[in-house]
Amino acid sequence: MRYGQLVMGPAGSGKSTYCSAVVQHAAEQGKVIDVVNLDPAAEYFDYEPLADVRELIHVDDAMEDETLRFGPNGGLVFCMEYLLENSDWLREQLGETEDDYVLFDCPGQIELYTHMDTVRRLVQHLRNWNFNLCAVFLVDSQFMIDGAKFLSGTMAALSVMVNLELPHVNVLSKLDLLSKSARKRLDEFLDPDPEHLLSDDTDIWSLKYRKLSEAIGRLIEDYSLVRFCPLNIKNHENLSDLLLTIDNIIQYGEDADVKTRDFDEGDDDDETNDVQQSF
Ligand SMILES: Nc1nc2c(ncn2[C@@H]2O[C@H](COP(=O)(O)OP(=O)(O)OP(=O)(O)O)[C@@H](O)[C@H]2O)c(=O)[nH]1
Ligand SMILES: [Mg+2]
Figure (tube, rainbow, N blue to C red):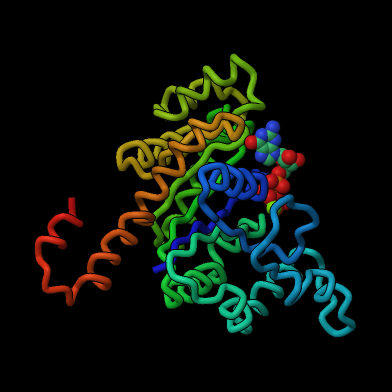
């Protein structure tokens, strides 16, 4: 079994920065976590990727091609399709090492996750290659401190959850950038009461669609559909807690122990040894 996080979220939500921080955090504990860049349009990240989709196809290839003539968005969709058609490339790059832990730094084009099936098909491949995956969906906390934006961010997260059918963790990123008063307000959003959140919205559009917004808010609340983990990437403890949550979901660590016993000692007649091992 191998382990992976599919790091997703809107453009600029902090995906690549999160990947670097996780790699560094793991390294400080003597663990190796790799990152695969899946963004064909990436210009900058400061991790050393295990694999980089730009070596297979770059968004410029799709845009500069005389017959394709894509713009940046269509180009990106084309590149992701191309990656799927050439999934053997990714498979080779990933190798077959047991117990590997890989972060997949995805592009920031939200429609790839919300309603297109590109990422869903990628997930299928990764599962076939023995990856235990968790979707990590980042949303910039700066956009989440007003009622309407919070609902819209929540709906985006929900639509990814429904589309991908993967274990899912939502993360409110860039907490370090929030002012003190904004951080206080954020508490209201972490355990949201949508009716209260929407009571501040007074513009005409909000008033007109108030009932609809309230109904959506109630749905999210009543069914506990979406929860967010706040992340201040500069706070080690905070990052540790988040990673622990994710590691539990993908059973990182647990499976590895079980496997050692099952396969290495399964044929061993010495039962006392087995018993000792399990404690
Ligand atoms: N202060 C602060 N800045 C952050 C944090 N995360 C990201 N940033 C900044 O936000 C900008 C975008 O971050 P990226 O990590 O490139 O975001 P991304 O989601 O990978 O962006 P795309 O790949 O373009 O979709 C960069 O200038 C980062 O330095 C954070 O936790 N705190
Ligand atoms: Mg990025």
